[in-house]
Every structure is written in structure tokens, then in C-alpha cells.
Amino acid sequence: MKRLYPDVTVPKTAVLELTSACNHRCVFCSTPWDADSPDTGKFSCSDELSTAEWKKCIDFMIGKGVHGFAFTGGEPFLRQDLFELIDYVKSKTARHPEFGADGRVCGHKEKPLELTIITNGRLVTSEHAVRLKDKVDAVVVSLPGLKTYSELTGGGNAAEALRTITLLAQQKVPVVVSICVTSRNLPELFENISAGFLAGADQLLLNRFLPGGRGTIHQELCLSAEQVKKMLRIADEVCTAANRYGTVGTELPLCLCNEKYNMLTVGTQCAGGVEFFAVAPDGSVRPCNHSPVNLGNYHDLELAIASEYWQTFKTREYLPTMCNSCQHMLKCDGGCREAAHIAGGALNSPDPVFN
Amino acid sequence: MKKSSKIAGIAMATLMTVSNSPAIAEENTGCAACSDTTGNNGETASIAGDRSLARQKLIDALKSMKNQPEQIEFHSAMCYKMAMPPATVDYTCPGCGANTIHEYNSPAGEMVRQIASVRRALPNLPVKITLDESALCSKCSKSERARLAFTSECGKCGTSFTWEIKDSNDLDKLGWLFLDYPVKSIDDGPGRGPLNNPDKVRAMVEFVSSCTFCPKCIKELQLNYEN
Image (cartoon, rainbow over the protein chains, first blue to last red):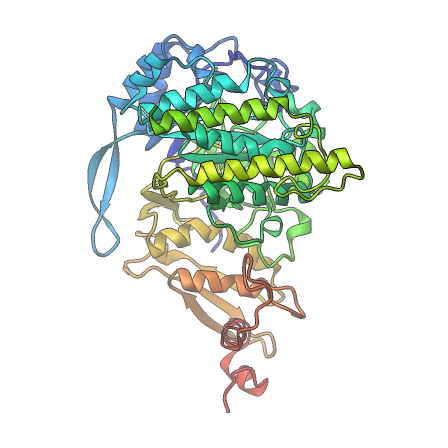
């Protein structure tokens, strides 16, 4: 069938980067608008949206069919209005279709919006933990190392993040321990994941380092193919021992994760631009948080989605040439396309893991 | 002391142990998941032994956590954990532009999620296969049945013939079309090694044949396994 109309449907999850302020200077940070990023000039992050503007943005997104939000930054706990925005999202509902036996929409029902907070955890107090109870679906706490923590984040120590995980777990707030795995912290990954679970995390979210943002100049942190395989084996071993599930957030080439994992789920197809998208602190939109592009203000969201760049994600027409004869091409995107873009200059470049 | 506090204490103790160990953060060789080391002196072997012991203690502590894990309903890769996959998926008809909403976990929903990969993959096949996805559009099709219809040009005689897929099993089979030819061995999936199941090999051959050769040529080429 010849394509005459682009798919401009809005992804169901909006990642709101509430602030560019951060109490960390992570060497692996991929946000393109950060002052240290080579792409910072494309954004106006000194013009951060105000509380009222973020509320308008949230209303706009709900009106466009968004069913869930993730609050991140920067560090979202540096915003004084964080809990006001959390309460605002939780006071709203999303319109969900209901289906008849024939699979067709037969009505609609209002349901609560999903909300996830992504934080480095260092500013979370016991009072915050109490306030978060029953308000968020999950808090994702970054724990990128134990001994390597300060070196990778530029400050603080892992004990503070572990304390936050415990505080949240004690309040029965679902906690996910998130680890950005680099060549630097891979040797302590076993202990790193273990510490997160023992502190009280319910799940593991594993992300490998991808060049972008401040991390563009730290490509030595990229994992090799063998290191990726080792990462997966270690993560599955710890998850299995702890009886906890883990997911690998950033998609991997299927040819690198062809082992059987007990408790670890590995993504091989990108959800960027299709199931989620990002809104920068200045209100500009991108198909993925890794995207080093500014596709305009969220008010023109459909125009941004109709752009050639975003449509590449919708149509998945970004497979590297090296994957064209691969038997896995129906279930694999050849790794992270934005990391490939940043490292190789085009969305269909090889994933940096192959460099 | 409550058990949760005790376990959190172990997490902190883990941190302290790692912080005081010169071996962990600085090692670059050997297997991080086991005590295999490529060290060539006694000190390295001793550190590896200590570390193996420490890891065994960690495993024991992890196993003592009795809570039932929260099941992850994984959908596709994103750097942010979502509690659940979306309930619905939108389909924009490339022919008429109409939007149709499907249940995420229905056969139609699965087809919509895979449709972009199917579209991009078909031109790479050595035989010409075209896709009719109009059954996914509520405006273009009044049929209630989700299906993807394909028209192939027979790889031998060039005759056009049609076939269809209608559920997730069929979607999985589509991947068989993209094996590297000539096929010398077939991987049976993650962790399972080479495919040795004759019934599955037969199913694969029959499926691939039925998509690439017309019924008449299948018989002529003896690809139908019939006696």
C-alpha cells in the first residue's frame, strides 16, 4: 500500500524534562540541551517553563491523548513546584477507549494518569518519601556505581542514593534502581545491582552508556559487544538471585543478546517517537530523550511528528546497511538509532557498540 | 531490628566493602560475574578469592528477600521505566489517513506494532511481495477480522498468489522469511542453540515455500513434504 498520509498520532507517554538544573555533572549525561553538550545551542534552556506553563503543557498533552508522564530533568527535586506538578497530574484523568467483542471501540472511560519520577535521589528526604506514597507509579533512582559513583556523577556518594531507595521502599513507593553501565563501572556491576536490591528496589532498569550530550566527548565509556554480553549475564545473575525483574532500557542489537535470561528483559526495538517522546525544559519536543534535535515547541506537536526526522522513527526506516540481510530485522532496530546518529552522523549509522 | 532495615544495612555494608576493595573498580580483565581471573600473581588470586566469597554472601542475602517481584509487562525499549504498557495502539492508514484505535494486546494491536518493521523488511526479499494492511483500518475495511494480506510473485513462474497472517504465531513465522540463504543452520532462539526439531524445520520450509512459490511450483519443486 502506497503511503499517502504520515502517522501523526501522539505517543502515549510524555517525558517532561522539568528543569535543566542538576546537582550532578554525570560524565555519561546524554541530555542534548545541557550547557556542556555540543548541541546546547539548539535549545533555550535558560527559558525554563514556569509552573503555570508546565500545567498548560500537561493539559495540552492530555488533550492529545497522552496517558502517562515521566518527570525528569536535570534533577526534578530541584524544582520547588515538583509536588505541585505531581498533584496536578494526579488530579487529572486520561480518556481510555473501551473495546467490544469485535475489537472495535465501543465507549470511553476516564482513568488516572500514570506518573514516574526519575531522580538521582540525593535530595529526597523522608518527608518527600511520605508525600510520594500513593501518588506516583514508580520512582526511578539512579545508582551509577558504588566506588565509581563520585567519579561518574561529579559529586556525592552512593550511600545517599541507597538511603533514598530505602526511604521510598519503607513507604512502599515502588522503586526502580537505574544504572547507566559504562566501561568504568562495569567491573562493580554485580555489587552495584545487589546494593540497589538490598536497599529495597523492586526492579532494575539497566541502560548502557550512549554518546550524546556531555557524554559525547566521553566515548571511551561505550561498552564493547563483549562487555554488553557480560553486562547482561551479570544483571540476570543478580536479578535471579534476588527474584527481581530487570529490563534493559536502551535497545540492543538482537545479535548481542541471544542468550536466555531468567529475570532480565532486553529491548531490541526502539519506542522513541512511537510510544514516548521528550519535552525539554524550554518546551521543545524531540522523539527521544537522546535526540540531539529541536523539532519546535510542543504547541506544534503534530507538525513536529509529521517532520521527516520524527517520521523516520514512526516508519522505522533507519536500519543500518549492515543489518539489511539479517534474519532478525523484523524484531530488531540494530541498536540505538540516536546513539548511532550522534556517533556516526546519521540515524542509519551502525550502533556505537560495533565501532 | 526489622528485616527490611537489616537488608538495607547489608546494602550499605556492600557499599563499604566495595569502597575499601582496591580490586573491584580498577579491574579490567577477567569475568566480573565469577571468580575467573587472568591475574598472574598470588595477590590477584587472593583478591579474587575474597571477592568470590563476598559475592556469595551477597547472593545469600539477595536470596533471603522473600517478596514477590512485580511482574514487568515489557513492551519496547525506552530509557524510562513505565509501570504498564499502553492499553491501546493507534493505527494511521497510509491509504486514507484515518486513525483506528486497537487494543494493545489484541492480534490487530500486535500487527500494528510490527507493521513498520514488516513494511521496511519486504523490499529486502529476493521475491516480490506486496502488503495489503487495509484490514487494520476501520474506514477501509468493514471486516472485524485482523489480518495482513500479502501478494507474492512466484519465485519460479512469476504467477501472483495471495496469503495472509492473522495472529501473533503467524507474525513470528514471518521472521522465517528473512533467514540468510542458503540456510546452513537455524538458531532455535535465545539460549537454545541450533534447531534440531524436524517438525519445526518442516513447518519453516512449508511456510517459507508457501510465501514464495505458487502451489503448482511447490509441487514441482517437491517442497510440500507430501509422500
